[in-house]
Length: 369
Image (cartoon, rainbow, N blue to C red; front, side):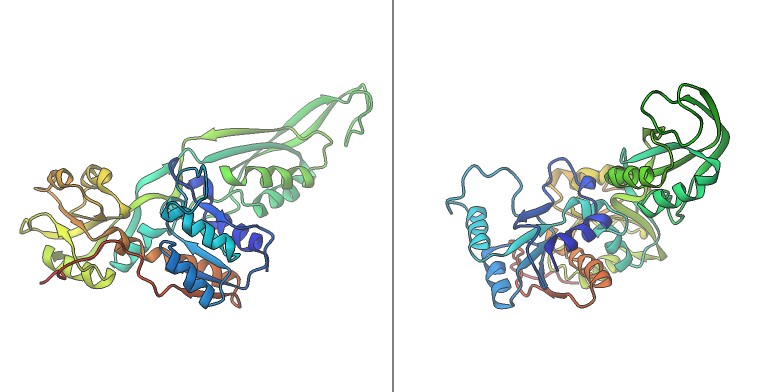
């Protein structure tokens, strides 16, 4: 299949518009019309990962961390990023990345971390706001079902675990068709009133174009009257980090032992044990130091993340256990999610997990009980 088919599928479920402003998720290297039949999944892309892709016959490498964060002014091979880009281009290997958009999307990296820990009642720690629109369109009575179906099929109308959601108000619209028009109802140069339904629904920003296109194609009017509003509602289930509850409270040491085993975390850094049991746990894959205060405000007994700075360990340490399990270790679940997204839609597409540990951090001695 073409790379564009796979990318369109991935971006429907993990929209690039969800990524943080500093990020660079998406196609890093390659052409959308290229034929592919397999992909290699890796948290990072290095020269060794490109070599592995070549050995395994994979013309696509999908990563969590983007290869290119800032702009490249030249590609001369003078830096590691430039060398990897050159090697990928020379060997016709495409690179696609799903970073903070995969962190933020519902069911993303932090949610998978929470599931692995057995948390219940999982909700985002920092809900995603400002990525929803409200659509209001005016439709003649007999066409309301057709137009609603079109916009729903294009991805509008989802609220949490409910879909095909809309609010409908009956009334009447007035108009006068001008010269050169071909009105669905009424005559040129004559005032006309038509019984209509105002259909309101919600949609994510990234689906705006396709929803409007589908709506116009299904609508009988020559000129479709509709409004688009930006709304501040949080996207249900989406956001950075997660917080949830263990089925039963556990000792702090017991929690960290479980975390070590589940995430293969060999060097957990943590605050002193407070002698309190842990029930409510916040997690965030990757660098979560700046959200320590939010975890504390949300009532977490423990906060599991990575890249905690020295002074961040002081934040709320008397009220909450803080644990840094490692950036690489906390984000490995990203590859499970990507694999599931691909194989569910394309079961015959070959997906392989990289055997190369790209973690740049090494530990002299594993964490001991």
